[in-house]
Image (cartoon, rainbow, N blue to C red; front, side, top):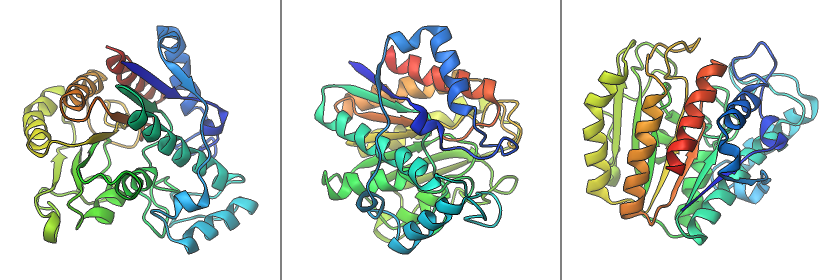
Length: 312
């Protein structure tokens, strides 16, 4: 079993100004902790990979891709109502996030029991035709469409523990039975984007293929453990071919913009359980993405918990 980590300045460039929650030091905060724990010596480091416009168009509309390119030249204005400001080089930075994910699934599918972690990734709010919630391109959506179209997969599991509901993924595939969607997040009555209620289980042929679990503000590790058996039963019943794991760290106690109170042990636990399921049903294939997280200490600890659990 091998663990491969995508790391490099090209990924770090996906960040906003210093006063923005998604600031410029997220990748390096993670890496300092990685080196401190010695995990950098136990994983294979891969350079970030740029996604082509053709690759982006597997999920996003051409008109939206063109808009991102234009705003990227000037670096002024917003891509949405105020959460996602443009910055110079934004198009290339966001394309490196997506391209690294695409390269990651290629490695996972072509290799033998290779597990992948991409720290700056999991931009789950972007829609096919617009940005949202700090997310320019939805790398998760591009990966799912690519797994379906290029690799003919019909049982793709997406598991998201970010404090925010992965609305950009959920609504894009709400009627698609190929996506097994599981999202454990802070109740939308209290947190952006205000979606992801328990009765949202998919539509049409996909009804019953989605599991949304809203958590009350202040929920801790014990509360998480109570709901986990439902998650594992849901996954095992559907026997996925690959697992995409959005490991957002903004669910850890002390995040400045959310209200959950998990410890990094939740990330350790979930990673171990998902790796076990991947080994059982998916030939070991799992790709984890860092997702959100705006307390740098929490982010560093949670993401390295994912990395260490993959190694174990």
